[in-house]
Length: 232
Length: 297
Image 1 (cartoon, rainbow over the protein chains, first blue to last red):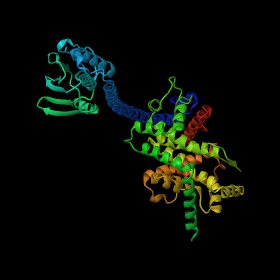
Image 2 (cartoon, chains in turn orange, red):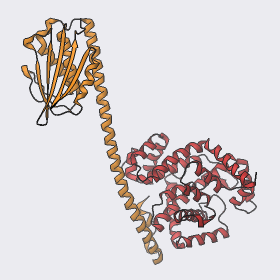
Image 3 (cartoon, each protein chain N blue to C red):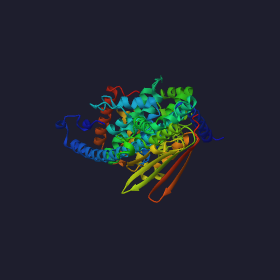
Image 4 (cartoon, helix red, strand yellow):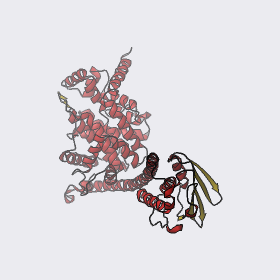
């Protein structure tokens, strides 16, 4: 309704009685309009809240789908590499550091997520300078591990501990084919991530991995084991 | 079967026919919209979802929100914007008007009857009733708008599903009797009873059915509670006032009707001058809608 509807006529031409009636009607209308405006603003705020929640839901759905997609891609990649059989030769063991570095860098590049901030340098000179998705990093580490272990038993161990509100995650990688001297232990310090256990949902999608998660005082212990990688 | 029972059976069959037509599908949405209007806890998000699933309705709401009628400088590009800019209640009323107006979209006219004139009358009565509530009673009148907009829906049912008898009734009016009397002569009942049956079929609140049934004459007012009586009287007064001021689809009110109208105005404590002012504003609103090309949808 137009706000000027009460004043369409020239006010000076109106009689006193008519002016009084118009004034009373106008005041009633104004009071109701104010009430309605207030309610509309509340309803709008409610709607903004609902839309915010909806956005979060969609974001989480998108993240979940991205993770599943990445896991599937990694699985396909592994299967293809396994068929080709030329990537995971024991000769590449000496290059574990490079492989992990590549994997992590790739993981960070593809994940593009801002919810994990890795700030501490890793051992052996690996420096993680970008933010990325923890599940993606773990998944790619697993892929790297598989690639470099080749034959025998490969183990990926990740330990998360909370210290002063910070979650530190240790990933230990070992495997029969890995050069013990070059075994890489990565220490990552990152901000607490809600749903960190979600990692557990990703690793099993890599064929052949078995996974256990123990809740310990002050942290989680995640153990992912791949026996006799089918890369040959 | 007595005459009354035969009439009831006939109304039931008419309303059943209406339910399986466009009118039925519109009824479903009208009911949903009315539920959101009635429910104070309903959210703007619910309304948005209701509109967004109906692309033609969505387009019409946006077109109306962007029309000269509201005159916003900024483009209203989403239903959310429309709810923010023109208000939750206004969007609800807009949806209701558009959905009901769809029934009148294609013109049909015979004798003095015209669908478009009936639509203009319904809209004018709805606006008038709402103005009376807001300005004279100092109340919102959200529901009164809906009830008044639907008050003559019985005519549409008769016109669509009992066309030949409806034409007979219109012909009978040439003898100088009113439409309601002519309907009762031909059908054995009138459009207010049909409208009430439709309201029951659409699960509208009972008082709306009562108001639709009584918009020509208030039956047994003693049995009504005050709020219902207020709604019934308001639609009655608006209906006649609109007919007196060029927003009727039938003959102007008879002297008896005019006398009853004055009595009802006094009962509502509305001064004739105040009613004149309201009618002037109804005319302005209708003019605005006409100029914006939004009167007929």
